[in-house]
Image 1: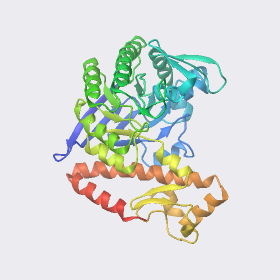
Image 2 (image 1 turned 90 degrees about the horizontal axis):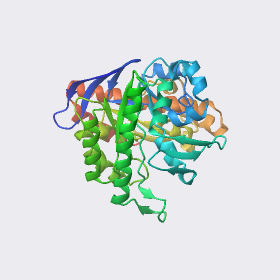
Image 3 (image 1 turned 45 degrees about the vertical axis):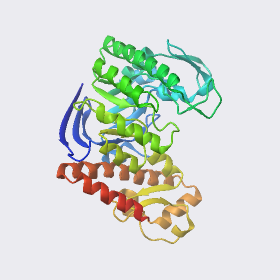
Length: 382
């Protein structure tokens, strides 16, 4: 079940304000989706996620299949009850994780054979298996299995060479065939949720267009742009971001996978993207990098040792409301687990609040002015 209502568009860009209704709730778009790989957003409780305004989170099909396994997941009736999250969940297909196994996996038309990174078991992932797993997880949005086209071709050619158009075409065309198989299995299982197709084609706009057109003909409830943020230079990613989302159907949600920085999100919105996810807020938090309205802050820098001020005076998150930079610097230096927890809360709050401000700007008809102020603030520095 999926309903997407397009509420407002920006006349000076491709930005749009929408509302996505799913089986477990309503999602206001544009939206950022925190990543919960193993059934949890690292270091953040479901209550904290709810308090900071998270409306939908991600789960990882591959890793949840490995652990705890489908028997456990089935006994809970799916991922929502297992992780105590009663709002919408999107699950990826497992394709990116399989791709990242490198030499440990063998891809064929049938699917992907690989050794489990957990216990070494010989496993097989196909479009049908991916959909079966996601049906057991009962995610509100499932993704077709696709082959992620890398920017740098490691196999079978010399490492460091850029993927050729011929290689990208072959991969894209197989992903299209896998899309049809994913869709057929989704229908066979009578999955009551929604399935998204994934546009591939590497850094080649012509291939992206072919992929897009054929996926649109399959009439998926929503569409994602995959195969970006896989090692390509930023200007290459921005070129594909400027090409593909706006060409997807206007009456269906558009999801840009695995992107990115605050600047990437704002640019993505301007190019017509409705949904984003990225591990950056929590990963950077664990490494001592905080996002603020006025630029990125490295809490490990010595200059924060005696600073009584918050991370961001304009932020209302739990970390900024109650703790100083000096305290967070101290926690990080001591290796206290509260340090990445508070930092993750702040970074996720920043991302979710940024999307809230984007929605408000679109509603008020001042998106262009918002973007200009956003860039000026971020460029000011902390």
